[in-house]
Image (cartoon, rainbow, N blue to C red; front, side):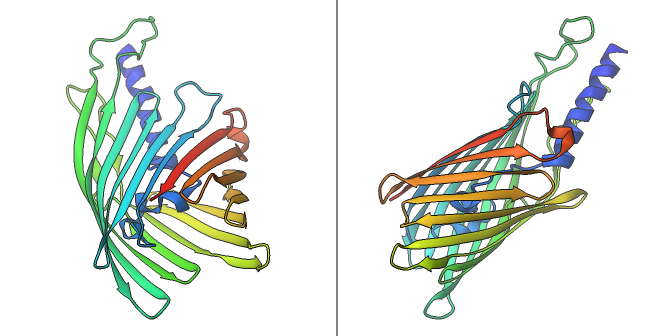
Length: 294
């Protein structure tokens, strides 16, 4: 009975993760677009390193934490190569995806380009059951830790024309099972293909003071789960300080601030409040970003 109870709890936790947030959610997505679309590597023919750390539901112990790293560099001859790493940890489960990104640029006209990209990599998944306790307060020796590695591939297309862009990508095309079921012990967690799309534009509001408006939309779609849509609007002051708001439909809203320390180094911060009544006691979310343009 104790074993069955723990199994049901574990199933609920994993199932909740699948339905609500099977892949990572970040708000400063424009700085790490290659996580979701390999074609976005080296869009501006430069090299860039970006690191992001997101802490969600601050009032809940062992709440979701996401850490990501992207690096891309221009190889010349219209090609770019990059590395993307994203790690999620929630409760006893942790998952890290490592991918190599490759993009190729096609020129449409003087100011318009289409980038085609592919991603190859794999996910490391682990379930640490050591700290799970039964109702008696003791660990159950039959709840063994689990780990697995699943290879995967992805692709994407990115269109850029002046200050306008459209991004379409799926970083992990293959549906996988991250663990198995052995000896009547629950140890299965599935992963389905996610499709990401984004569109954005930069409007010049004041040429003399170099003030720009940067609206963008970012959506996540997966079969069997509700879609997630972000609306972001940033106001840029002389390319040195950006301030704006973000709204995730039906879920949260917040503010984003980004400061250019110099022409190479950019730091960012995002603060979100959850709008759903059932999440009102979970606490807020913080997201920190550091980007360096070589």
